[in-house]
Image 1 (cartoon, rainbow, N blue to C red):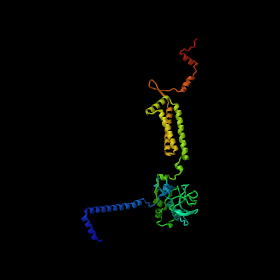
Image 2: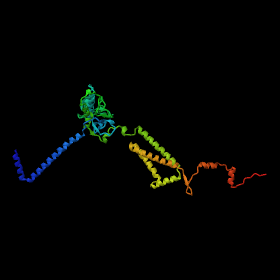
Image 3: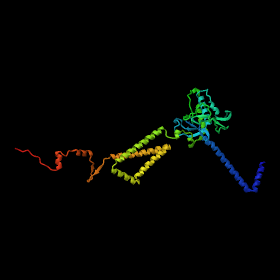
Image 4: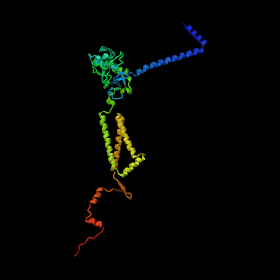
Length: 397
């Protein structure tokens, strides 16, 4: 078909049905605009990934946590940190998971790179590297498949798992175990902060100008784990967590919990003892303050008992943070009230006389001294009688 025939057909269509041709033209226009928009959107995706990419790994660190089975797959859980100088104790960039074969492959490549950089020419990959892929084998004359995965008993160890399918997705059991007895031959550095770039001592004659650039930009483990990372949310991070971290109070927690409980109980006994010695005036003033707040003494005792019950329940449920908070609040309240009773009991009671002056209450010691005086003495007898006699004068001769 020639160009002229195309123009003729277009003109013919326009003469026969101009409205239909207008609609078709608009449809082509919208389709063209949509295609341009899609192209722009697709071109922006690589740009986003490029922004997420890390070029220099000098300051970064990786922290492998444990090997877990998440969503039916054996995964390595790890965190990435932006400052390796902080030894992975600050807030991580994120916590991620990656398949065991992908992580181990990058880990061994990093080990080989470090060995080559250190001048070790005899480095050899462990035999278990053959099981990074799903490998067929026969056990007792039956076809099975083997692949490196997590150990069932320890989240810090790896094991060669047994599968029944060629994709290594369905676990199989041989003699009651789904792991083989093969020695892995190496151990991942779980629980250890590992810098992405490990520098070796080298002389200037041994390196060229591109050595430092290549070292900073080529980090096999970190770059691979950044590329293959999958977000690990809160539920994921609880997978395989040690029971000592999730299930209860450790020894130090129990000791501190016992100390705070005994301290609070001791203050409660001291408060009861001081309230028994409280004067009637102080008791009435305290009762008036409680009544002014719209409460009764029974309400205070009920709230106190309820708070102890709540703290006990939270402690049994192993909710550490809220248990610590409530127990500290209770101890602070008991200590404050005990100090109030102590200060009020140490204030000397005074009496205001009819003339408006403060009359100090006589000490019991003075009263005892007065009582100890002998009423049979002449002076006391004279005062007791109330009579006065003139003394006898000597006669002058």
